[in-house]
Amino acid sequence: MQEAGVTVLVVEDEPIIRFALVDALEEKGYRVLEASNVLEAVGVIGKNEQIAAVVTDIDMPGGLSGLDLVETLDKSQHHIAVVVTSGGHASESLDLPGDARFFSKPYHFDDILFAVRSAIAAKAKLLKKRRGLRLVGAAAR
Image (cartoon, rainbow, N blue to C red; front, top):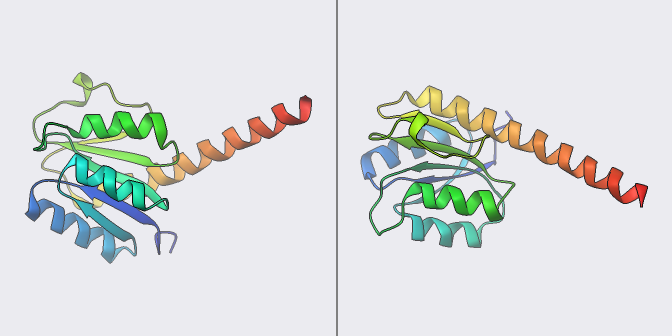
């Protein structure tokens, strides 16, 4: 099972949704960390370099949204795959990185699980390609 031991951070302010998503991910073998807001999530990310994916809601308390988190990840944590959820936004109205996945609430957990798995695989493939290009560029110098 490729999910075994892979770390995912769930950022969701609604406890029932967060707990259910954590359970669904753990059932598939993921190691799951959780945060109830963006500031908490940033702290968790800072202490856990092995995070492979973040599943985040957009609307959260504390002045920062999931979109702020996504922007931060896109700028500084290129290795982390992103899945965004929202009950009040449409994907067309959002400025998400090209490799981020989006789901409207309510969603099916199977869809989120598939998105997490495919986002991690796509991010790994992209990073491998970038490393290869850097190696080729370094060898050409």
